Every structure is written in structure tokens, then in C-alpha cells.
Image (cartoon, rainbow, N blue to C red):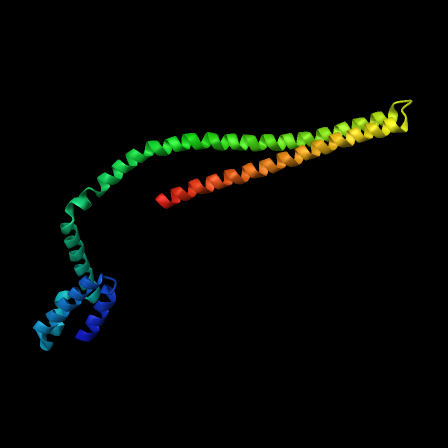
Length: 193
């Protein structure tokens, strides 16, 4: 392997370094080869090892140098993270203790609206059936009385159908609201993590 090939391979391993560190590293290796001279290139490559090994040694040196520059920051990073976790944990527990019952209440309310809607619809059908039955089976009713009974049954059925639509609409609105709240809460957790 020639000096040019060695430096080209080394360049591939070091090209992701910050520009300043990359330039210093490449200058160092180029000067090292220059000082040794063309006749000692093989010996320099043997001393440095493969380009991958030389790059790895350099990266380890840069890592150690970085830790020496910021000793307090790296030493206390874990401690700060642990303290932050201890501070945030009770707040998360409180949020869960509040959120779970609220979700249960929303689900129970939605279920109550759906049951009320079905009960209204069934009640309307039953009242209509009773009014029609009574109008047809009571002896001696005039056609006007029969029409009034059927009309009253249809009126009650219409009111119950309207209640059914209102309850179903409310359950849909509450369901969308609950889904929006859950999405917002989960989005915040994801952003913090």
C-alpha cells in the first residue's frame, strides 16, 4: 500500500469528524509521513497499523480529550438525569391517577348516551305500537279518535327518534373529544422522550 492509498483510506474513516478535528488529524498524518520521508513509508504504516486502527486510535484520543475538557459535565450527567427522574416521577404518577379516571368517566358517559339513544328508539317504537294497537282494537272508536291515537303515537315516535339522534351525536362528539385528548397526551410523552 502506498502513502496516498493509506491516507485515502484514512480519509474515509475520519471524514465524519468535525471539520477542525478532521483537518488536524489529516495534517498530523501527512506531516508524519513527510517527516519520515519516502524511504520510511512502509515503517510508518507498520507503526500506525492499518488505516482503520489508526483512525480508531485517533478517535479514542479525541474522546479522551473531550472528556478532559468537560469533566464536571460528563461526571454529573447521570446524577442530573437521576434527580430529574425523581422529580418528574410523582408528577407522572399524578397525571396517570387523574387521566385514567377521566377516561373511564368519558367512556361511561359515551356508553350512557348510546344506551339512552337505544332506549329512546325502542321506547318510541313501543309507544307507537301501543297507540296503534289501542286505536285499532278499542271498540266504538271513531275514525277521528283512531287518527288522533295514531298521530299521538307518531308524535312520540318522532320525539324519541330525535332524542336518539341527539344522544348518538353527543356520543360521537365525546368520542372524538376523548380521542383528541389521548392523542395530545401521547404526543407530549413522545416529544419529551
